[in-house]
Image 1 (cartoon, helix red, strand yellow):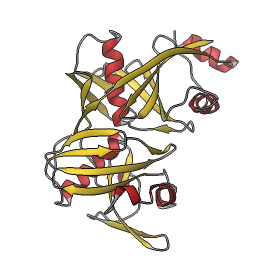
Image 2 (tube, one colour):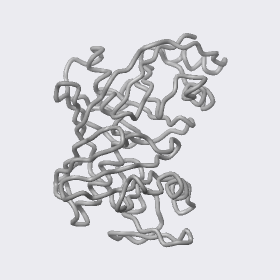
Image 3 (cartoon, rainbow, N blue to C red):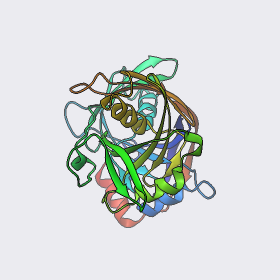
Length: 288
């Protein structure tokens, strides 16, 4: 079959967006890996799959797959791209757009000039939400064998946040890889390295599960700011500088959602031919 796609990015965190409402097919893990290959496929950090809502208060549902084919729960940069995609194509008339992810209902707003604001929901500081086996605390540590101290929060997906004096020199690949796959995090974890410039500004680099370091991570920015505010290190509105650009994050504290604002860009559209199996063909037909 021939499958249309749209390539998009949020601050360099790049996505392939597939409209499975119009073109339903269940891709295999291997097909997703092939499509993500930057030399032999389209290339992307994550694939965003748009589908029909599964609950009455949602306009759409969507699934997120890393380049290695694993499915993840949430993606902030992807949510902004999702909003631009459905609004520009007239799949919904106006914002806000309510989108069901694996474990949350997001509300997406169009602020104009290709800037989008996402209600990301409340951060969850219970270590069991990652999951991570520990008594709830402000800060945690692991021995690797050196001691590594970090904050932890779930934004619908798991994050730990390490403080660093210099983002440019932070061991994002080496230490990020070790922590991402550490046995203490049975479902893996996203690892952020946060440099605090002042109470209103931070720099951040993130090693993501299944993708490695990306140019930007929206949920990582939300988790870092929420952890910093909770620790008394940051004010309620913070400018986050990532390798691909900047986001503005606002969190008023316990009981309030994290609000993320930033750009979403369309890059190009195309089609790709896929060989699908008999089982995929059956699923394709059953969903029509």
